[in-house]
Image (cartoon, rainbow, N blue to C red; front, side, top):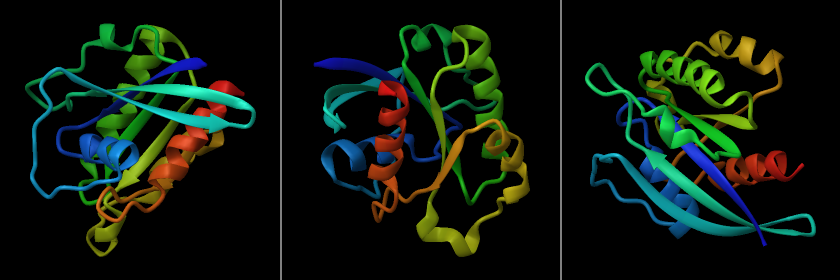
Length: 164
């Protein structure tokens, strides 16, 4: 069995933990819990003929008072950058984390999740901001940890890129 480490990165309260719970345990809770440091979850997926053990590192959110420790990224095979569609500033945080991660560990497979698609009528996102990342091949998924929309698809897409 192949093992692949995925790091979940994004601003404070974008839904990283909720997305991981939805993917690994197929559950959602409205109760907000701040991640302190890192939470680690596992899920086995099948990619083609390959059985892959995904080790998902849910890193604490970055904000004005706390930055992500780049040492957490060591050994990562892929990254998921999470943006809260209802808070446009969270895209800038994700883009900054992408830049820092690339500097720390190089370019590895990654996807961007625009979370909270169940609240799309409240979104502040300007999709044009995504264009530079799309032009260099990054996939964007509109997800909802609450409804489960595109969560499985996003993780499976990243798994295929990592095994690829």
